[in-house]
Length: 276
Length: 276
Image (cartoon, rainbow over all chains, first blue to last red; front, side, top):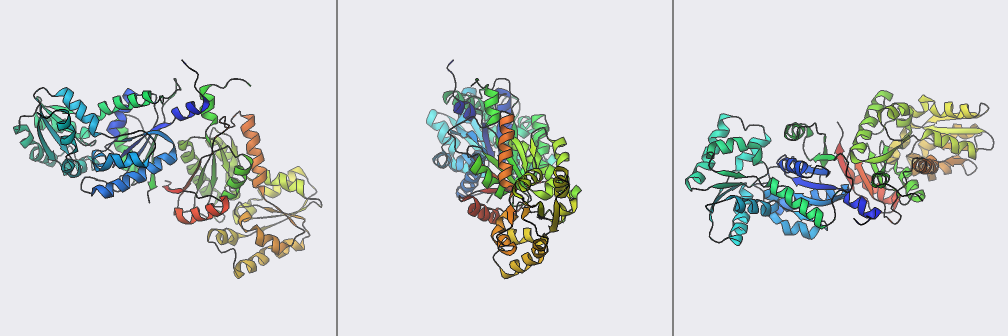
């Protein structure tokens, strides 16, 4: 192994920046923490302005660029846009505005779905913004023109998760409303095209039945992050270090800390930052 | 030179944390940037809750501990309490609560005053909290029991600085009101016992006249920070690095950024963080 320079050590020791509209991106943090247990993370959840789904692409891009600016101010080595709506709104814009490696969530989800599906009948659910962007469909069709795709916007799902309402009868009613038509299309896999959805995957799986495989792109994202860090020689060089997780939110920290603690199985501390 | 471990490089590369009730501590940042141009700084100005002068020691201690907690979350290698009121309110409390080296502003000011005074007649001005704590007097008397000391609380000075009112006729009237009695005591040096006061040192010098030497402890603080970093082998090991300055405030960032840009002669970006 070649000797690392001091500059290289310091840069590679930096945290991975993770961005989401709220708590959904924590499902990506969970996978990152499993797959890359030595890597530190700085997270920004734009909880004051979520949900992103119904917003214009232009508005979402503006919000995301503010978060990227903040995370660069905090010193990071790469950016994960752990939000489908934000990715769909303009991954190429973010790449132009930031000189760090940036990874969105759509490509990884597409790869995972293609690996999982046997029949080539794939469903996609996401926010209104993500579904109407057709980014998943375009990416899937590009890889395989013969796929049968069925997609559905599920705007209430993010709100159910962010407001802790997943375990209610009305959530089940809403889930049937959204998902029954997809089941009737004969899909064998369903892309959870929103990082919030793994937080309600129990309900989704019950409603679509056990024969449909749910695709949570978080795992695939963690694999790609690992590849990007290796390719850029940016793996944390401190072998025995406890990872450092820092959380920032634009809204109230309390509800975010609660969801985060449950999801990551550790107490987390989030600070509220005003983005302007 | 011995080889540094990777852990050592990463730790020594961390920023110096600087805390103040508002913009006053920026005078310390300015000296740090002159004396230690390779060191990075993370600053917290509690602008939403300034001034600290009239507050109880207990309340100020609570605020300072919140800021220390935040800066530790940001990863720092030492803490400078760049605020006399905060130092007077309980430096020993902060040392107990934090396992990093902590430096207050009173001891450095005392040392600088003793070095500067020829007659042993020394004046001290500060906030109500600092002056009524008598911390300067105690520290000065401890070093030399024969000093003649005269002190005066100047509660309006912080407000003049924070509200950009230093160049007004009423500021001059107030300055005479506070300082004439000290001049009459025949002092030859005057400790600016508040990190805001260097921001109005032009007016203060005019009012007290050219024969009284103003003691700005910021220079002495920078010297001590340098000594602490050396003693702890915590000097930034990256020789050719541009320092990174990060600013956080509890109030509105705009006015802080304006004062900071003027003082540091560079544009600065401050983020508003809610401390709870």
